[in-house]
Amino acid sequence: MDSNVINLKDKLTKFSEHWSPRVIAEMNNYQFKLAKFKDEFVWHDHKDTDEVFLVIHGSMFIEFTDKTVELNEGEMFVVPKGVKHKPFAKEECHVLLVEPRGVVNTGENTGGLTALNDVWV
Image (cartoon, rainbow, N blue to C red; front, side):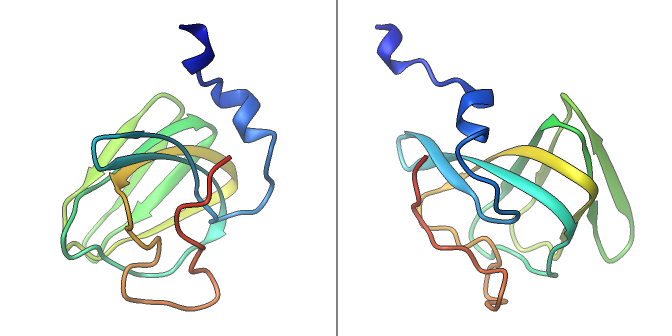
């Protein structure tokens, strides 16, 4: 049964790109994705789903139109569906994201930071 154990630290060593989530597991129609954040992302929203951010290492911020939330190692935040937000991290931060399969990281705001979907590590 231990062949199903997923080591987050090991998986994080297998990629270095920032803002390019990598799928590590699926449960029903949800994907668990690891990502490395650094510097600014883009303003975006996800019209049909909430988005979970769980900080594994470091710290990050999520900017909203009316406030900024700081997340530190071991903390989690759920961004409600349809709410515009912009994640950023001053130093490299490692994050676990939980969202339905097929969610595009930049929502409808596609551009240079839009990552390929369904990339496994």
